[in-house]
Length: 245
Length: 245
DNA sequence: GAGTGGTCTAGACCACGAG
DNA sequence: TCGTGGTCTAGACCACTCA
Image (cartoon, rainbow over all chains, first blue to last red):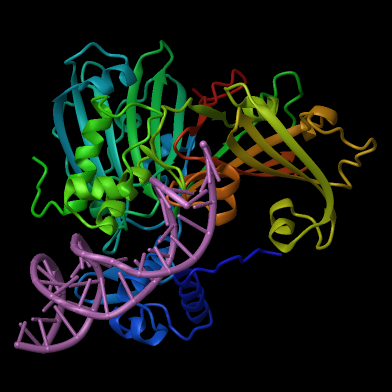
């Protein structure tokens, strides 16, 4: 069924390693033989072997660690970002148990945020940086921006606490707007999330508006594609139907 | 601010090319000098030069075409998938003008679909395959599955027509559930969408349920990450029939 | 057939991690 | 220090496109 015109050397090797991993010949967490050994075994040059490993790395089957070796990935606990109104409940709409690292700052709105937040240039914003972790593995990054004129943060925010606009100032919110894209991480994101540069990330922009159209919060989230997904649930407006339950 | 401990040769070259592209020295649609020429110019081997180009390719700045050359990407018209209830209106919730390629078939539900559709094994399904195009550029893939016992397709479906469950059998729908992930495309997806293997895609699973909990439709969508995003808009239940404020 | 990118080699040397 | 992966070289040969 699948055509295999010229199975290049590296694809053949990747396929063999894939099989050995899935069949348990190499077990999760285990170190693979060194690249030199594997290259010798498959009778290819190290570059070719490395390009085979790069395929597996892109599939999140293998973790390369400089100076240590290539390791079979442990299956990852999946995390789920609940979008829509659910996202307002708490940042830990995330399913897994997680630690939070929080950093806040007051900044002048840079240009790409003024349009998003619909505020004048150089407005004062509060920026909240989140990083969620489970053990040592980072699970996601979040930059949350709140216009200061809407949310004068009276008490200095304590660290390690979930802070969200909706938590301490419950205004009449009218809309949660979320835009999702897929891309490769920036170098910075890759190192912070401890993921490979070739692993896709979910990039999510959330804008929360109150009932007079003011933007109450803008959030930029980055989630590693190998373990995270986002779910959105909507119900058609049941206006004309009797809302029997 | 950004640390540059050892700017590897390929990153330096990529940076230079990036600059030349953004400054207009190389214009959109234009062919770059051949890899051999560039390698000579930068005084590196062809492999190194190719790995520099691979970076730009991953950023969707450059299109490699075998036998022809490397081309500066034209800026892409962005397409937007409108999620939630809006997705029910029409598959062409897609913003851009597009052609559709449709293929339908009746199949036995494979195992991964029985759980999604909540139907018994080997149930009869109608499978609808979509590919949207704008000109020659594919914009997205969709596999839509409809249980046949819910939707006996009486007339054979005409090709080139938008077919959606909601279009010809408007049931009392109760819920649209969408799950979004980011990943790299499979080889097949990459060739169908004419994208590079290193370009992330948005993968979207949509499940539509009617008011008695039956799954009316399941859709698997794949959208190229360089031009597509998905938006979801939700309003907190501002129901007037709510008893509590 | 001429020119392009795609794959691969058989090395060299550098950078990181751990003992 | 030693073994690991990371970068790079200077080629060879193959596959694709187009005139």
